[in-house]
Length: 134
Image (cartoon, rainbow, N blue to C red; front, side):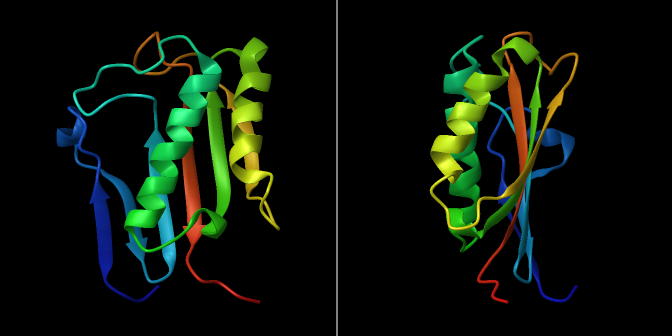
């Protein structure tokens, strides 16, 4: 991989652990796991899977746009949820964001035991490739 590495800071209270919200090298963008939290760390939409999923996707799309891409450039999502009974709410938000695309991203949903706060129900990682053509 060639090119300069540029990043988007997380601007979250825990960013001192040493990570970026997203990093771009060449036309590849990797987006860190995103959760539904504000800049001061407060949980947005506690225990609401659908609204948390929408918030997370908004954070991901903004990170991609900040690095010169668009939602259409997102090629993969990895969705981590803590409550399998609410997977449809997460899937609905994901579909609203990506189903309109000519080629929606490859995606996988994983059920995990917990996230860093009990009110968080979902975290999503994503990958984008800016301006890719066959």
